[in-house]
Amino acid sequence: MKMKVLVFSGLLFFISCNVYQNVSDKDLTGTFTHFSRGSIKGFDFRYELILKKNNEFILSIHGHYNPTCTGSWMRKKDSIILKCSEVKDLTEVLSSGYMDKRNHIVKIVNKNKLLLNNKVVLKRK
Image (cartoon, rainbow, N blue to C red; front, top):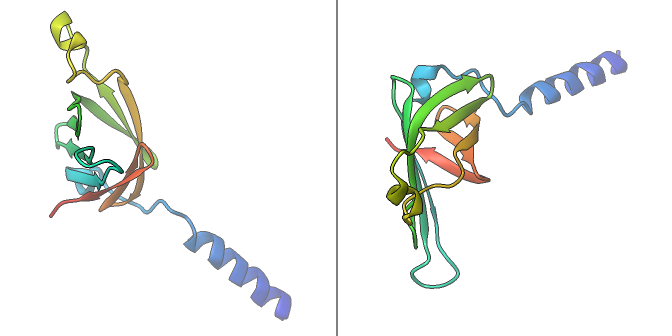
């Protein structure tokens, strides 16, 4: 009997430790933000990710430089794949607003919390 209780408890523990929750695409749409205070005054960063219903997104990092990318997002199980649109204007590529990383993988924690670049971004209400 003790063995059955231990096995059942262990199984329940592993199921409850699963980070990913069943979240619909509709639950994921909205604005997610993260604020990091820099160690030097004036070097604070704010991440903003806007996921739209039509599978488009806007990712901005506000700080010393303000890179932004827009593109399309796609759901893959417990993650969101962000693919930035190609930039055709060379001056934009050379500007401080260009985001050189063109693909991002965002981990879904729950419908109000995502993990982007090891930063927790929370849904704004």
